[in-house]
Length: 566
Ligand SMILES: [Mn+2]
View (cartoon, rainbow, N blue to C red):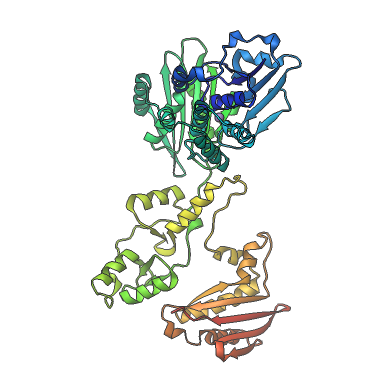
């Protein structure tokens, strides 16, 4: 006899995977090892006859030939059926997608992969062997993938899960049944518990993330508490939630803990493993006996808050220096600058470099629409301006952008404008976070390299750059380091001082007209500072190069004047 075991409190993934196994090897019977999730129970009340289920007590252990285990690899999750795994000479095979649990079932035959649902692994075998499935089978397997991947929205969902769902749809999975069982209503009991949880939930803000916890006392074990946990997390707008349920009268008390998190860097599996629980980084659970449930929960909250990484701050995310204009700049000039540099807005500063307003593309459009191209921007800019501090965290910045619908937040330090964080900076960061990386390798996507230049560039080269930058500043120009030197600096070993053989510098300013011969002007200024350098001027391109001897090697500096695109 061949059997496939569904873990305790069977969910759709373990059931869907088990049903798939019975198609792969006909004659295999399914054993539910200890109850089922209420929604699965409701589903089976109608669909039971479509699948070859067998009661645990009807299994003739002496005739057992093979056991397939799906969606778990720990013996205790199979309740009393676990002893069957010790039957001498029995073939055991495991299919699972929990990568970080400690397996204690003795077999070499394992298919373990980082997919959103175990069912996906079985679908891939069925698809490869060109099976065609009855609609009820396709439906329960699709439910397994939908429920375990949040209909492909959880970070654990993969392309393989999506492909498996596509195939199951083609096999006739019933969309109406899927809709019914993926979003089940809350029972009266759960509704009451949810109310109680919302009244007593506690929250704490850690580095801008909301961490929440709640403890619920009930007379008996509550099934489907995991769906209540997900719902509670949504309603309380928390980023991480630990729900504890103390139940029964026996001493020590039974405590079950369910965790949900959407904070990158938090690993609930690691958090709950010492208590004998586990699961995934973002969803895990544990059940234990304890005399001090509150102390256990508070201990977990404590360790959880220590796991929360420091999020990137404005100082990490901002672009600097900021392109600024004066309140007296005309709307037409501002429009030209925006067009030329592809910015979505400009910071307006007064003569003391104090930020006095922001001119967004929207403000500009309004002014132009009314024919006020010649008017100064001060009449159309947004003021006062909401600003942030270099230490403002990513979650706080995101919240401000969403709450006030603003796309650019100037970063102000001691009343000086030091940078700007735009929607693009935030998206770049959030997008990076979508691809899981280990905390050790995670790094902020930096848009400013000034700090790196200051700390790593060879002092003599820094001095040359500073001289060129100062000369540019006196003309009201901005100077950019471009080309190979930037690439080399990005790739440089942060532990070592960095040297380059040549720099490419681009000069640019608001008024194209004043930029005439800028390369020549700057090269001349450099030559004044370094009289030993030779100056060559290439008239045609208004490019100048100074050849100068410095620090035992020849550093060639090319100052290129770059025409604007208009
Ligand atoms: Mn699963």
